[in-house]
Length: 113
Image 1 (cartoon, rainbow, N blue to C red):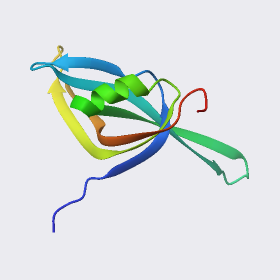
Image 2: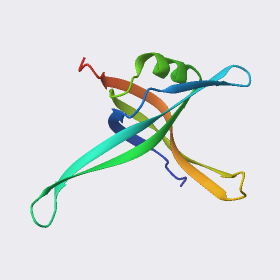
Image 3: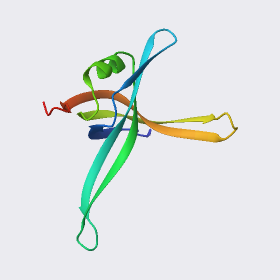
Protein backbone atom coordinates (compact mmCIF):
# COMPACT_ATOMS: atom_id res chain seq x y z
CA UNK A 1 0.00 0.00 0.00
CA UNK A 2 1.21 3.50 -0.80
CA UNK A 3 0.96 6.46 1.57
CA UNK A 4 -1.71 9.15 1.63
CA UNK A 5 -0.83 12.84 1.79
CA UNK A 6 -4.14 14.73 1.92
CA UNK A 7 -4.96 18.03 3.62
CA UNK A 8 -8.41 19.61 3.93
CA UNK A 9 -8.65 23.05 5.52
CA UNK A 10 -11.36 25.63 6.08
CA UNK A 11 -10.05 28.96 7.30
CA UNK A 12 -9.58 32.67 6.77
CA UNK A 13 -6.84 34.27 4.68
CA UNK A 14 -4.37 36.17 6.83
CA UNK A 15 -3.22 38.32 3.91
CA UNK A 16 -3.94 38.88 0.24
CA UNK A 17 -2.39 36.24 -2.02
CA UNK A 18 1.03 37.24 -3.37
CA UNK A 19 1.62 36.20 -6.97
CA UNK A 20 5.01 35.70 -8.60
CA UNK A 21 5.86 34.49 -12.07
CA UNK A 22 8.67 31.95 -12.35
CA UNK A 23 10.79 31.05 -15.35
CA UNK A 24 8.53 30.12 -18.26
CA UNK A 25 5.82 32.52 -17.01
CA UNK A 26 4.55 29.95 -14.47
CA UNK A 27 2.37 31.58 -11.80
CA UNK A 28 2.93 30.83 -8.11
CA UNK A 29 0.75 32.32 -5.40
CA UNK A 30 1.25 32.10 -1.65
CA UNK A 31 -0.69 33.25 1.41
CA UNK A 32 -1.31 32.37 5.03
CA UNK A 33 -4.49 30.67 6.20
CA UNK A 34 -5.77 30.66 9.78
CA UNK A 35 -7.78 27.76 11.17
CA UNK A 36 -9.27 28.19 14.64
CA UNK A 37 -10.82 25.87 17.17
CA UNK A 38 -12.56 26.61 20.44
CA UNK A 39 -12.63 24.32 23.44
CA UNK A 40 -13.03 24.47 27.21
CA UNK A 41 -10.01 23.95 29.44
CA UNK A 42 -10.05 21.88 32.63
CA UNK A 43 -11.49 24.86 34.55
CA UNK A 44 -14.36 25.29 32.08
CA UNK A 45 -12.90 28.43 30.51
CA UNK A 46 -13.40 28.95 26.78
CA UNK A 47 -10.07 28.81 24.91
CA UNK A 48 -9.53 29.62 21.24
CA UNK A 49 -6.49 28.26 19.43
CA UNK A 50 -5.49 29.48 15.96
CA UNK A 51 -3.11 27.56 13.72
CA UNK A 52 -1.44 29.33 10.77
CA UNK A 53 -0.76 27.46 7.53
CA UNK A 54 1.46 28.45 4.59
CA UNK A 55 -0.47 27.87 1.35
CA UNK A 56 1.04 27.61 -2.16
CA UNK A 57 -0.80 27.30 -5.49
CA UNK A 58 0.60 27.01 -9.01
CA UNK A 59 -0.32 27.92 -12.58
CA UNK A 60 -4.00 28.60 -13.42
CA UNK A 61 -5.15 27.85 -9.89
CA UNK A 62 -2.69 30.47 -8.62
CA UNK A 63 -3.96 33.07 -11.08
CA UNK A 64 -7.59 32.39 -10.11
CA UNK A 65 -6.76 32.59 -6.40
CA UNK A 66 -5.00 35.93 -6.87
CA UNK A 67 -8.11 37.33 -8.59
CA UNK A 68 -10.75 35.89 -6.23
CA UNK A 69 -9.22 35.58 -2.76
CA UNK A 70 -8.60 38.52 -0.43
CA UNK A 71 -7.49 38.93 3.17
CA UNK A 72 -10.22 37.78 5.56
CA UNK A 73 -12.02 35.53 3.04
CA UNK A 74 -13.27 32.16 4.29
CA UNK A 75 -12.03 29.41 2.00
CA UNK A 76 -12.21 25.62 1.74
CA UNK A 77 -9.14 24.03 0.18
CA UNK A 78 -7.65 20.62 -0.49
CA UNK A 79 -4.06 19.74 -1.15
CA UNK A 80 -1.03 17.98 0.28
CA UNK A 81 1.83 18.74 2.65
CA UNK A 82 5.20 19.62 1.17
CA UNK A 83 8.41 20.43 3.05
CA UNK A 84 11.23 22.46 1.49
CA UNK A 85 14.79 22.43 2.87
CA UNK A 86 17.61 24.89 2.21
CA UNK A 87 20.70 26.47 3.74
CA UNK A 88 20.48 30.21 4.47
CA UNK A 89 23.17 32.88 3.94
CA UNK A 90 24.64 32.18 7.40
CA UNK A 91 24.92 28.45 6.64
CA UNK A 92 21.98 27.45 8.86
CA UNK A 93 19.73 24.61 7.71
CA UNK A 94 16.13 25.75 7.28
CA UNK A 95 12.90 23.97 6.44
CA UNK A 96 9.37 25.08 5.74
CA UNK A 97 6.23 22.97 5.58
CA UNK A 98 3.56 24.25 3.21
CA UNK A 99 0.20 23.09 1.93
CA UNK A 100 0.40 22.63 -1.82
CA UNK A 101 -3.23 23.39 -2.68
CA UNK A 102 -4.84 21.48 -5.54
CA UNK A 103 -8.32 23.10 -5.37
CA UNK A 104 -10.19 25.76 -3.44
CA UNK A 105 -13.71 27.08 -2.97
CA UNK A 106 -14.49 30.57 -1.72
CA UNK A 107 -17.06 30.21 1.07
CA UNK A 108 -17.35 33.87 2.10
CA UNK A 109 -15.41 36.94 1.17
CA UNK A 110 -14.52 39.48 3.83
CA UNK A 111 -17.78 41.34 3.17
CA UNK A 112 -19.70 38.15 4.05
CA UNK A 113 -20.92 37.38 0.53
